[in-house]
Each structure stands twice: as structure tokens, then as C-alpha cells.
Image (cartoon, rainbow, N blue to C red):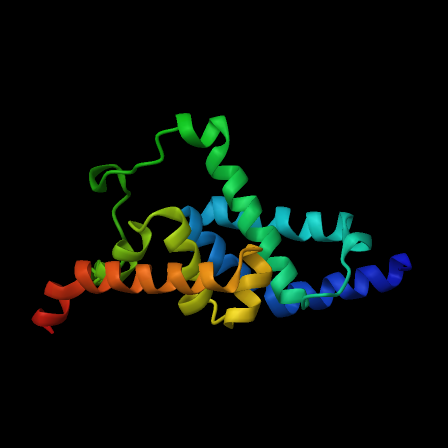
Length: 167
């Protein structure tokens, strides 16, 4: 592909998929700055390796796969494992507007799932990928995706049972 065509493809891909990929990366990493870095790295990898893109899957599926692998690489990095990224409320600056606490029970439940179950949950219910797209992104059999989805749903129902009762 010619350089100008590749640049045009990248610009269109960024315009179309940057936000969904950022949401996926944030959900995966739990940190805005790390998620933004992962998004940039995703598009850099796509730019560098576009000649390897065979078109068997859509752009979105291919980019989501790159983004997930980029997030996994960040989670495995020595820096990530050895850095304390926790911030206690007393270290935060005073806000200019009153703080309204949101109910993040569902998000916490999803993020507490084992990685493989969290992955299918994020792809299916946060990104809205179809089963076939998930199979392409994860490169596992359809039956594996179905099993993980059912297991994640069962675990979430169990951990959110009390939360539903309160509503």
C-alpha cells in the first residue's frame, strides 16, 4: 500500500475507533494515562504492520486484537508490576466542585473477574463485539468464547446479587 493510502487509512481508523479502543484499554488497565499510551501504541503498531493485515477480519477486530495484546504487554512489564499506582483520597488535591460518588459496583465486579473472563466481558458487553468478532480477536474456538461468556455471566450474577436486591 502506498504511503498516502496508508496515512489516509490510519486517519480514518483513528477517527472511527480511537474512543472504543480507549475505553477497552482503560477497562483493561484501569488507568487513564496508561490507556492513552496503549491506544497510541496500538495505532503505531497498526501503522508499522499494516502490510501484514490480510483483511480476513475487519479493521475494528484487528485493532482490538492489537490493543488487547498491547494492554497485556503493559500488564506484564516490570515497570507495571513494580510500581505502586494506588492513590489514596488524602493525596488527591481539593476539587473545585463537590465530589459526587458514583456507584461503580458493576465496574468493580467486572474488573475483579479472572483475566480471561474479564476479556470476554469487555469485548462483548463494553465493546459490543459479535461472537464471530470475538473469536477473531481472541483467536480461540467459538465454544471457548461461549464457555467464558457463560462463566463470566454466572460469576457476575453471583457477585452482584446483593447489589440487585438493593435497587
